[in-house]
Amino acid sequence: MVQQKEVDLNKPLNAAEEAVIRRVPLEPELATVALTLHGDYYRQVQSKSNRQIVWHPLTQTYVWTVFLVATVYVFKDLVEISDSVGEFFNLFYHNKYVLTRYFPAMIFVAGTVGLVSFTITDEFRIISDKLASDAYMAQVFRFPLKIYANAQAKDLDSPFVESASQSTDLIEYRNSPIALVTVVPMPNESSNDTFYAKITGLHVRKAYSRAGVEADLLTYAKEKAVHLCNRYVADNNLRASKMRIVLVSEAYSIDNNLTAFYAKEGFVVKNTTTKLDPFSTEATKSFFYVVPAAALLNFFGVYRITYELPMETTVDVATESVDTPKNKQTARKRK
Image 1 (tube, one colour):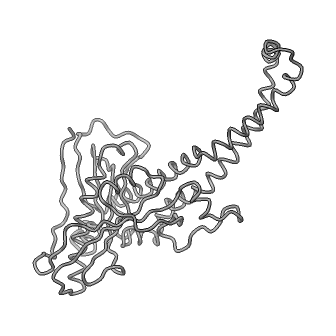
Image 2 (cartoon, helix red, strand yellow; image 1 turned 60 degrees about the vertical axis):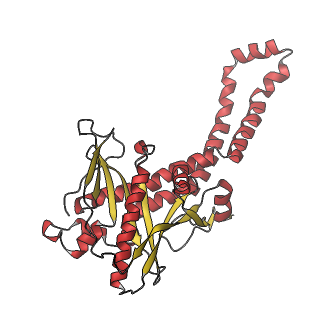
Image 3 (cartoon, helix red, strand yellow; image 1 turned 90 degrees about the vertical axis):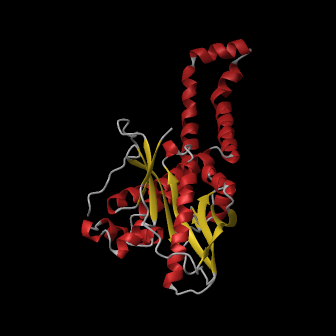
């Protein structure tokens, strides 16, 4: 395998590096980085899902109900033997050990809420882990990433490597990847006059989620959709005068940043589903063998949304060049 560039998502960037934002295409030495950033998206979604469940009104009602019941149990004896409020606080001051009676309730609440949250959101962790499998990589990138990572210098101009490198763009800051976007064709949904391309990953590291990088990534995705459309036209020898392009993407309901961004950019919601894993053929049917998964996920507001963006640009098959140039590195100083 080509020596891979490393990225540690738990460490800050090297301040000694020049503060330059650079667009770079996927290269063999960035294969592991691309996979890491794709996986980080699902880890972040898992964290957001846990927060959604913990702060859900029903969860908070449950926690406070248990706390109130525990409070009655803890202070019942002191209340019964106290003749006044002052005597109650005096007895409490000299019997602080009664607070230890809260421990079982605290353990019970933490255990039940934690179990429910883990059971629901652990699927995101599983998706993140499975991205390293051949089956999942084939759906994310539409080519064998492991083979691509082993490409040597002499292979860089081969059709396979050139095509693979155009599937994904990364954004580097201080010489470290902080974001990526991957776009793949959807030939089964495409027709003689409409081409569908799908964003299988659009992600920014958490520390830079408010930097507005998503807009740049979407611009890159649109460019890639046009390039993929050109290739689709050439491969299928189409003779249509124009091709309409539709860009498909997905987000999770609890990812407020991405859903708000898609709404702002004009994406239209086409479908929602509680099947959280977009790469699996089967959905989780139940939790604890009795609770319907769909009902519980809908109750907590955790589901996957499919968006479509009809692009304003249509490809003129008669004049558009199929030989789109390779992505070039572009860089700009951070202001």
